[in-house]
Image 1 (tube, rainbow, N blue to C red):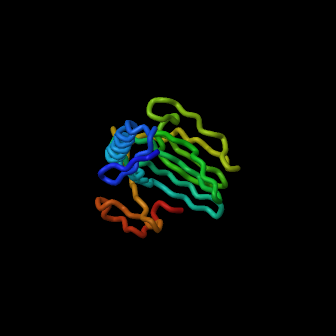
Image 2: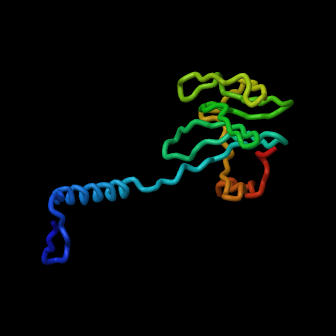
Image 3: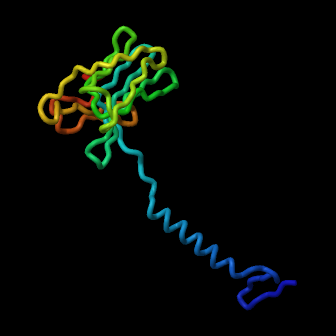
Length: 172
């Protein structure tokens, strides 16, 4: 039922030899596509403020992307649970006082031009929305940002001469 060819391959009768080039083409396409879409690392978080309390941690950050406008994220962590409180472009301040999360906004909360709803509470903490902040100048105040290394240490950009990598100016 089988025969041996000159090059030492055994071909079984009834085998569809036409599907072999199709498999080679499929493998070539997969390799080509993987080369076009390499493993892109996730964007870096640039932190604006971090508040640590005995039971929760609040983080205000945005992702470093190519575009100049990326929305700010405010996340709360309690134990192993992480929840995003809001995703918007006009956050002015973040505070935690008397078991209340106070988020200051330049006007009403919005993401780009769309108004957004902020929940009344999250993880048992009341959220207070403060819309009384006013932009100073055309672009507002420059934002004091930092990154974190793999150990959680702060890394400030070189253009902040007064900041040190171990400074806790934005951690309460």
